[in-house]
Image (cartoon, rainbow, N blue to C red; front, top):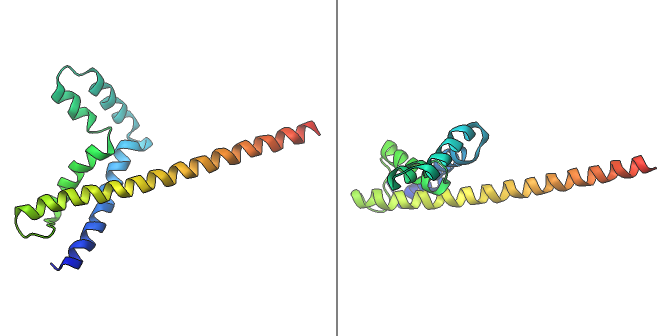
Length: 132
């Protein structure tokens, strides 16, 4: 695989990794399992148990395991054709995926802020209309 193809794969493979990691650690559909894991990571008696359950509440941590699964699934290697290529690919995909998740988080935060400002303005308009 040429270097250009490897770089293309890097940026494309990071997309599903970011999507899965974000969905599991942030979205409503996984709220109950995430709350359970959050509770278990605080109340667990052993450090191994705490770290295992913390994994499902942290997008950065979880992205490492999702990346590992995708690297195994695809056989993707970066720069080197042997086992070192897997290690380089793994950390690179995690880094790009977390960059994507950061951008997505900032975008969502901006949208929530705009929505809150619009609702506030709407309430003020209704208040003024009632006073008149």
